[in-house]
Structures are given as structure tokens and as C-alpha cells.
Image (cartoon, rainbow, N blue to C red):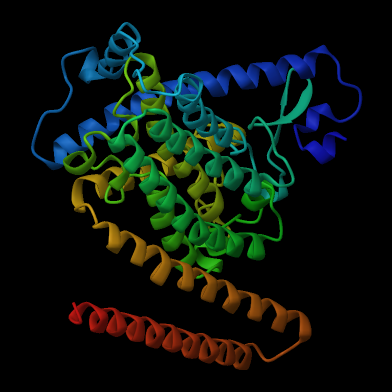
Length: 408
């Protein structure tokens, strides 16, 4: 039963007080680390953007301005909690939690440490019990992450609908269309990782990437990583895909009518998502806790034991992706809505589907004993013909729309 649930290796066999206390400790630590990481992420974003724009950024509250986010949170907590007269009371109160909770649930399945080198399985021994440096490792971990990310759209959609105002409703409708559009591309790029790794377990995916040459960034051909990065940015409503909060069009978007701690929950969820997605990106494509290794040459961090070294590597890779997301925010202008939809439906989804079919054809060819060169060439020709037909259909549709427009 425990293997089916994939909760933790320490729950195999008789469950005594020590395993339960370890699981409870993990829950508390992940919750506390998640809140602290979110607070630091806000400070990190403000500081990096300030540096890119030749400004100082937060520097008054605490050393280097580190406590600025804490001060903002305390201020929000004591502000008046307003509920619009035309709002649906229950749904209005529920929506922030549907955005905040999924961000933490996705955090739970990411390996945050452990030694996966030299054939090790990443388990550690705490208080005499064998466990993993993650809250849960279900056999369907990747699907769990996708399912949890899908729930977040309900929080945004219900927040806009329950507010009883047109601007939040328009923002939530945009969010729904955007998340549905980009989730398909994100799922297909994720499927290529599962195809190559042969498992849905996050720890199994990490164990499959012992060296740089076996990182899924390399073995999947880079394209799925690029698609996943773009699609995840759109999923999180981060710039340049933040049309759900376009202030020049929608005041504040779906959360316009929210105040006090309810707005703070949206704020926490929004800044927790990049942390979770950065951890997933490092896990899926860059080996997670695995150190950087080229063949037998391993770059180890001195004076740090294996399991703790894995945690350091996870943090370093996470910060690298957080910097990329901040870089996107500071660099790219916001897309128009038609450009957003075109990129999702006409570029990312066909590209992710085509690349998945190419890798699948190669895998089938390996099993059947086909010539790998001929298999790849034939699959590439089929994909090129499919792409050409798609472009022809899009061009015909565009010309038809222009012809209809000229009639009026």
C-alpha cells in the first residue's frame, strides 16, 4: 500500500511513531522553507530588476532590505478585509486558497537533496529511518505536478467570477484561456522527459541523469526544455505573458477587488510558483540534486557530505532559473493577446507534438531494430510535410479572413 501511495520509504512495513514524526517534520520544514523562499524571491526580484535598471532597490528594512517583504506582509495582514457587495461570498473567500495551496503541494514532490551518484538511490538515514529528502515520491509524481498546476486556474477563474466586477472577470477569462493553451505544450514537453526516463517518479527521473551527457536537456534534444520554459512562464502568468494582470487594460486583473490577507495569499501563490517551477526544471532537465559531472569527472563541493551537497546543487540550479524568470520580466515587452494565442497554438503545441513523435519513432526503431538514421530521416520528412500542411492551412485561413474583412 505504501509503495502504491509512494509517500515515503520509511512507511514500508510497520508504521511507528518515529516515521510519523519524521513525515510531520518534513511537512513543517517544507511549509516554512516555502514561505521563507517566497519572501526571499520577492526581495531577489526587486534587487535584480533594480540592478538591471541602474537603481538601488529595497535597502531600508533589515540588512540589504531583506525584511522588506516581511514588512509588506505584516502591513497586508492588518489591512481591512473588504468583500464587494455583489460578490459571491463563499467563492470569493475560497478562491485565494485554490491559488496558494497548489503552489505548496507541487513543492512536496521535488527531491531537495540526497546522493544519487555512484548508483545511490538518493535515500538518507534520519533518526535510524531510511527516507528521502522530499515529502513524497509517488510513482505518478510528474502527473501529480501537472494536475496540481491545473488546479491553480480554478482559483484565478473563480476569483474573477466571484468578484462581481467586469475587470476581474475579463482577467480571469484571459487566465483560463492562457493556461489551457499553454498547458498542452507543457504537457507534451513533459511527456518527452517521461519517454526518455521511462518513469513518472521524480526521484527516478533524477537518478536517470547522473552526468551532463545524460541530462534530459541533452537526451531530449533541448527543444522540449525550451518549450517547457516558455510554457511554464505563461502558465505562471509571468511577463511577458502577464495579460491577466494587464494594468493598463484591467486595473489589476482577477485580484482587483481583493485586499488584506486574501490579496496576500494571491501574492504568495504568484511568487511561490516560480520557485516550484524552477525546482521542477532543474529536476526534469538538469539532474536535480546531482552534481555537474562530465563522464568520470565530477565537480564536487568540498567539505559538504553527499546528501547535503545535493541540496546545495538544487538551490544553485533553482537560483539560476529564478534569475532567468526575472530577466524575462525586465527584458521582454508584454505580448498582445493574439500573439500570445498564436505562440501557444500555432508554434509551441505543434513543435512539442512533432518532437515527441520524432523521439517516439526513434525509441520504436531501437526496439524493433530499425536503422536509426533511416528512422530519423523518415520521421523528420513526415514532420516537415505535416508542418508545411499546417502552414498552408494557416495561410489559407488568414487570406479568407482578410477577404471577408474587405467585403465590409
